[in-house]
Length: 582
Image (cartoon, rainbow, N blue to C red; front, side, top):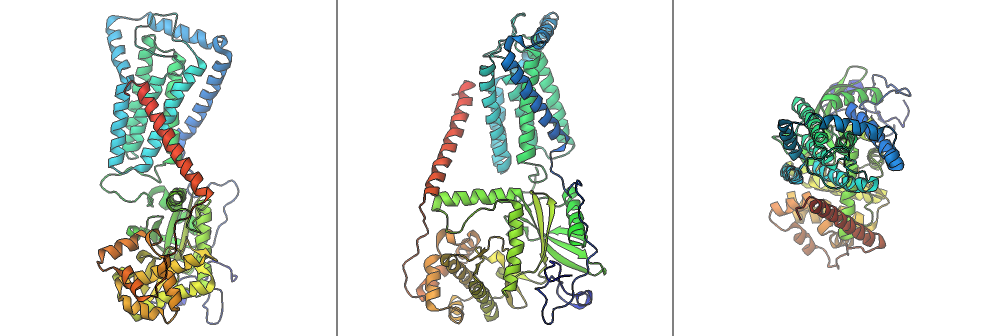
């Protein structure tokens, strides 16, 4: 095994007798033990599916084809108009057949069914659903639900005007109608409403399937009723149902998949935490075995309370020699990258880009960078967990980074912060400065204490060659963390052994407001005493370093965000006006 291999660690003999967990080590040098013996990696042959394929399911693939056929049909009708061969004749024949069986009692039933397509009923159901999604804090479901309806509402308004197809003219219309007929906006709206409610409120399983089948029945009955009343042609109802169902299904399959955003009751966990059981759990085991050569015995969630941007887990594995040990894993998905991108765009609008805040291009970029930063920091002597590498779960969508499990380590909030912890915590920042690195997220949850020494974790947002401002912020936040759980005066005294008074003064001139992580601000508030003010009273006076940054980019983002909000409001108001409710 070469020096660059990510699986370097202690030998099985050391694993069996050591109190700590085996971990991959730094590049070989004097005293470095042999590698962990793996069970053999397997290269995935070309054409073989990944451990966890994308979750379109059969229904998603069906509706991709269905919407494509609808697009072809609408284009054909739009081009040919009244000369659409066969379509007008088929619709006319079906309408005449339904008109020929009209009787009083069937007309009553048809009008009752057509009432389901009323604007006020649809809007009532939608607003109740929106209120429910807000109550259950399903923000992702809410955004997809509203976005799909805005698209369907726009298509239901624009397409009929473009195509200009009249209502059936060879039969007597005995139902209420308005506007042109193709596609049937009423059928599309009800189909989308019912499907959206199913996706937003029903967990995967038997009841969700039953709801979708019931929706199919309701939409078929509504379509038949509107054909019977002479309000819609057959193709109007079919295309309307396909557009409403297809757009809603694909919106949830692509942007809010059940595996990433499950509907669950009784627990309001963070949306960042993915389910690691079922198909994903099996995929994790399969991927670790194939790509890292380790056999997974058990996978459990771990430290969810302190993690908001990934799904952390504790994994028990065996190597080729049969030695058991534990590793730590963090599952990243494309949803985490999108959330980080939106967060940073919001901060750029509010404050301007804080010198080095740039979003990751993809989830692969994020996990590659964290693995790289772990190696760079470990090479610099920083107390970080060693990395085994990362594995691919779903290409460009889900990846798992696997590192040493710091057995026996405690979050600093649960540990005794003595001189040894203070010195080792400050030494981490000193080593980062000397190596030209920055952590960028120094907070209590990211500082662990083991054997009386501080270790730093979660280096995904670290930086090589950071700005002096960012390095100063790291120092201040480390001192604040140590001061919250220890003695600020002792922290200041020990800091002067590794940093100059000017360094410390610069740090507390740089750190304030948004530069302090949210968790650290909350802990300082909960502990009562003003730790930040205590430190500032000890350091030489220095003017605060400005955080606000104005740029062309910030102005452009602000204008674009305002325009999007205005456009969304106009679309909502337009839909309400179309329904006669505004």
